[in-house]
Length: 259
View 1 (cartoon, rainbow, N blue to C red):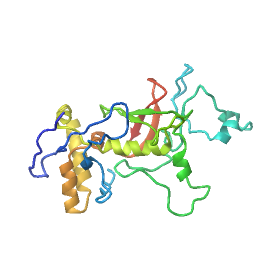
View 2: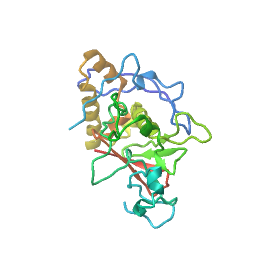
View 3: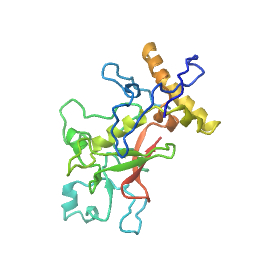
């Protein structure tokens, strides 16, 4: 697939698309060598963050909506907490990734920003996000891969361990990193043309211009504009991460919730 010629009309009225074609390796969440570096932030010219806009159990033994926070190993074995008893028939998501519709998410993260990292100061028992937390399995039982979907995205985001080994599992960090990178991929003109005209396309355009316009540096703002509409713009301004929820499709397929 080749992308359409780049258009250089005034940025105030015209959306743009990447001048390069994005290539993906089948069955992998990693980027192929031929992926344009323009689609991801570079270490020399980091992209400035865009300011944010302002389940009940199923009776089948293999599918459960994983809205219950991830249980630690100690909680799984604690005989004094029968309500926290771990069942191999249940698939649970780590508490930092869990969608809890009646509570705020454990981690405050705008998907326009790079993934959250532990604070640089000394951490105590009250610190939610630590290096150890990021290295923990994203699900319980651990999975060697998982897929994330969203109604506005025609692509599934497949997440695999950063360093695959025979005993590797998808970690919390793997999920954060993959979501950010996948949503930074540019869409092609044909994919944009498939968007329904009217409210949906207008919302995508608005998200694109808002994201680019939020960059204070004029040169970096123009550079970002020239990179074109990205997948994150298809979320139509809803970029606050609310967590992952289970689906009835399979225990390794999760839905991204945003607001």
